Amino acid sequence: MMPGSARLRVAALLGSLAAACSPLNTFDRLVPKDRGGVLVAGDLAYGPDPRQRMDVYAPRGGCRQRRPVVVFFYGGSWSSGTRAGYAFVGRALAAQGFVTVVPDYRLVPEVRYPAFVEDGAAAVRWVTAHAGDYCGNGETVVLMGHSAGAYIAAMLAVDPRWLGDTRTSLKGFVGLAGPYDFAPFDVDASRAAFGQVSDPAETQPVTWAGVGDPPALLLYGRDDTVVRPRNSEALAARLRAGGVAVDQHAYRKLGHVGIVLALARPFRGRAPVLDDVSGFIRRSASQSGAGPLGDVGGEVSK
Image (cartoon, rainbow, N blue to C red; front, side, top):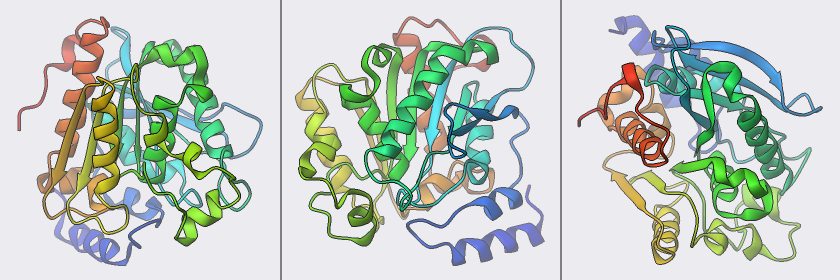
């Protein structure tokens, strides 16, 4: 259990987080660590830019079998964030039995669309080629993201321009409060990242989603006023129209930042986000023929 003083510090920090894009580095240092997941490799380069680096987390206990791989992209309006601030996500998912990769990517204003999507694609290609070095199955990859990171993951999952043949390794997509249908660009963050694009529709996941896409899990808070729930609802409808399996959960009394913080140990009682994500990844891996997860166990009950 978190000591009372630590709970107070976390509560104070939550009160100061900006809803859309505050980095979570300080938060990560305050929350209790998941002992079952550990950092096994850090600062791995997937490209030449200093922002093209990633960290890898894996279940504690050695390499007894190849495990499903999760690539998690954090949010921050495409203009902020660091992988270090989301170590709690890497540890939480690794403790559930998954090799988890958290990449950095280039940010606005140094770059604009499509550079951050291109970085995401480069990171996924690196992961499929090297996952085996960390007990991961490079042919069983689930893409996951929060907010702007969910946008990156969604584009890689539904738009064949980015990954090409590597898309065959994708067994699922998990989106937490993602913007998938946000044109025209009428807020500062979207104008800064996409305002130069001549055809806004080609930047939208809902434009590309459909037949042949991997199964999706779309999670969002009903109280999210930053990325409205209609984004997830629109993507779910488009995927289902193409015959794609979609699980969709709207959590009560949960906002934009709260949905990702619910992955951290002190806040899991607010919503079963970790349970829902872990169950989906296990089902996706099993249905892909990756085999059972052995010592990891089955889906966590809710």
